[in-house]
Length: 612
Image: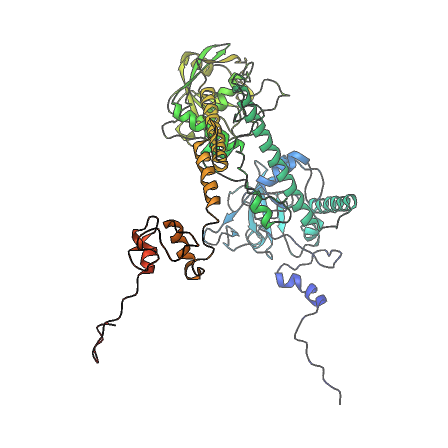
């Protein structure tokens, strides 16, 4: 009898791979890859970003992309990311698709059936314009258009050509289309993999280290670049801040405790009034990668902390700044709100003082809106803020884009302020809390009106240049005043800190900084000598462990009795065992109490416990 083999309760690796496409519900008659199976792109996914699309467009071959992703790619490369062939934005076809609001899935607008990865989907191009197509399920188009030969679009009512205007977007049974939509065959993915492998191999060979995976190498390189950029930006910002401090303090006399003189360091204790350590001691205690440190040094203030301290001083100063723009159309005087938005005001005033706006133009003028300027006059000059890097927005509820002549910062999004600004021609309150208002026009509104009326060309650029001939600060600079006040304050704190440290050190050593040896030092020396001389006469024991005769010897010494005269006493009551020893000079009450005889207990009767 043949033994029956038991049925397996698991799938082998080969069976699992063969059934993979069936389990995912995307198996079709597509072409096979080197592993024997296809990876068709899901219908709702963009072929470039591999994420769900929201604004679908398609190529004439039927591959779907997201418009926000494919457009920049085509502008940069001019190639189809799937096939690698030439492709431009004019070849893209905008897809008009219906979406179920409840489920959020794309569906056929006629049958109201959701599109799955097994649905045959077509797009019917609209003529005119020719670059727009309505998307339907093939079932609806076949039953309502192809079979009755009624070639009129089901939604728009426009006529279409069955051969030229119908684009096949998805068909699981179409071998050629499945090969085209196979992720393994995408040109941009193959190129990326090849580049990553080449870079990883070169890095491993060049460094001699252990070879990492492609993902690990990419992540480590990204972290390294980010750290280098942050370090360079912080160092550059700090260098600029300290250069400004040195320039302000150039006229001041530099001392050993100067906190802002050239080359000196600014510590958090002097800047903020709060003691902050560098953390080196704790770091070396918990990490073997840090050099051993036994002292908690005071932490040096960062560039951002120094700037924040100056901006607080500008707010306390409560002064406005005034700037004059001499243009080829007239003079515009500006009031700068240095007391409300000090960071933005300090940036603008610093750039004006450095002459960065001299020779620049208003490169963008929009009637009934604003005039934008501040762009570098030379194309070779890099656009930067006063501190080199973009800075954060500053908002104050007292400042709004209301009325003409409002001065505000131009930016490319949150925390991207550099040096460009704009002047409004009318109220633009929709820009509140999006652009930092930091000033207003106090003189020259007629010049601003004349600028508004100039003719403009492509990109809203004036036909005739509106140039800023020179920009100058009128009166004092509030930013410089606040910086000088902060320098003096930090120097005074640094001097007080050093002076206090010296006093504590002198006090510990018993010295007086002003008069040499202090009275306290003299008294301390005298007390030390007296203690040394009396050490020999003090008993060597303590309490009940005093040697026998020690107390008597001490009393004899106090009473003037010699050690040889044991039978006689120089003072009454001493040596005879009678008298009050507490009356002796120098004898304490505690010693006298220890010499008194103990009281005898009272005699009690039987069962009387009152004497206990």
